[in-house]
Image (cartoon, rainbow over all chains, first blue to last red; front, side, top):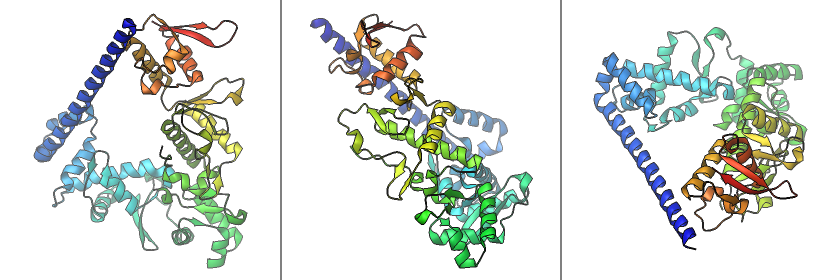
Length: 237
Length: 195
């Protein structure tokens, strides 16, 4: 009997100690992270202007699991006066988000979605505005025509394509499809296109097939009355 | 227990149709697998059938047949057909290595879902035996997964027998950290010695 009691007591103690140890470690990590954030807020300018300092700082960020890019955006977004550096940093982050979401949305992201993603980035909540996005896109313009803002039925979208396929513009027919999608809460059908725009079946098919091929539309073959619906993936976010 | 909250994409109607665009399809398969993994983790489900029904959960009280189905969304009236289900399961097993047949020769026995890796399970099991001072002792399956008062960690409670076998055979025995004794006249494990 005694043996098993001892064993229990030891095992409880063991569990307690290892729990305590891991709690302490995560507290320490959190303290260190917030110290780094404070440091970045106070010495942001020096970090930016001194190359060696910046490199060391970046290394430290990475070793405690902070994204230095996010940290830079966060600290500079607190300053109401935007610097050119801020826009450059932000534009890198925008490109990153666009690349990450490309498979999902086919290269068209709503500005609203982009803004939410920028504002709630990892550890930070930063006060980035739509104006900041437009300014950052100007930075990207000098690199080519890959990124542009479109208006589709009162909603702003960012269209982006790889540098090598710059000519892939959105045609008027595709724009019309987005208009119906926005109106219908996300999808379009052949019937809707025929009834609203008087398109024939072939035109519907060719525009929609091309958009599916480019990843702009997802197929849903279980629509009402067996009619296929074609959904615009930004609905997900 | 609160009902599992599916991610928003589970209400996206085209998710239930296999996408013709290859890149989008990969994304779609990934989305499905991530839904399966978080669902199984939430309900501590370790075994599902090849058609995605729940076979075993570590929560004893859970009424398995009242759980929301994974591959169906009644609110939007959409369901994944069997052929596409099988593509998704294959993706989970072969592409992501996050699941495995209990017995490849008898697929109907079901699929073990690894929301926690076998290696992680092995660590938990080993740590428990070590911390409770039982290294080198022969332990029964009962002691490893059911025992009420031996400091058995919550995560091992009611651990799926089939999962335990994989943890032992695929990890601990290979590392030379475990030996198993079969029960006479059966193919069931009678005792386990962790060293």
